[in-house]
Image (cartoon, rainbow, N blue to C red; front, side):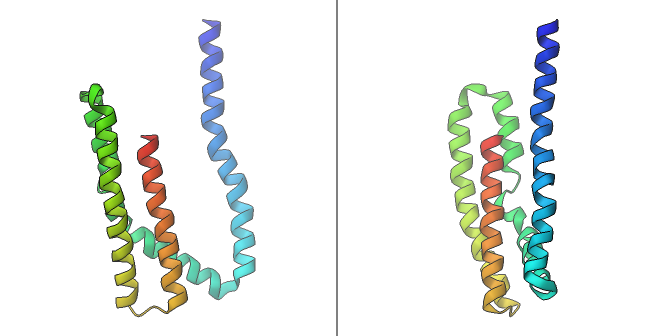
Length: 135
């Protein structure tokens, strides 16, 4: 019983460590970025991030949840399902970036904002791929 309690405490600590480290790094980093970019630059950055997140659903389409449910029902097919989902998400990633670029150009944003939207789109797409890998 002592061993399992110790293991539970260790797991709780490890699961808590990630969000705590993210906050400890993100808050000073956000202040630094805001200071360096200034009001206008930070506004453009946040706009580009919001724009990329707005179309982020294209990069996932609920595939992580579908993968988890299917693997729970058919554990033997996990490697095939996982690789299939990653392949589809790779195609969705390309479509997502194309949609972002076309939307940014259609709305008439300048080159710096368009490139920033694409860069943050790459970030969002890679986060979606990472979430699939973690799933």
